Image (tube, helix red, strand yellow):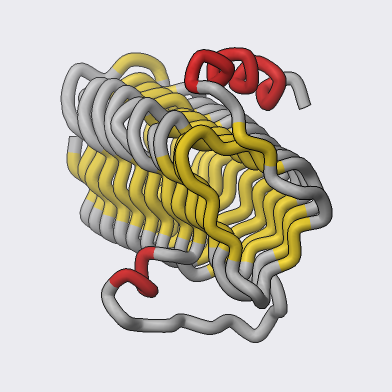
Length: 239
């Protein structure tokens, strides 16, 4: 189904891909084969897709987003409830979610992110630009504000802490944070707390710990055994 000007989508089950190059308004819950939107796509209900979601304009739904593949946003995206994807979630603009966010194959934001619930992935979770996360973050690797540092660039926001995590961070492998304020605990195999970061909770590591002299950690880090990681995973999710 193609919309190249302004149009309405009634909802229900659509046995094809939805393509919007103008303005589209979804009137009710919609299930479709995928979405490509280069204009604006708005709706107050839920969206289920069995293909990729690609949006380079304004994407806004009031309900949940569920997808079998990837979702990539390069404009602004706002989802009123939870996001559950089997693929990758990638955003390079403004991203908001009013519930939990899960994407099995990885999560990456390079603009601004504001997420009310917990975040989880079987792969890497990374945030650049700025982020406000109300819940916990769980992933293979969790990288907050550190990717630009690896290529010799430093991106500074006006705020002292452009990354604010009010829950806990748990990684099955590496945790790296830069200029982040973490209220909860941090747990990982290798943990690096870079310049300008503040950690209020406890820090647990298996192999290595690195804390920048200009970072502040309120309690001494604790080394744990590898077999304890699963136990700490459960404690992080219950925070």
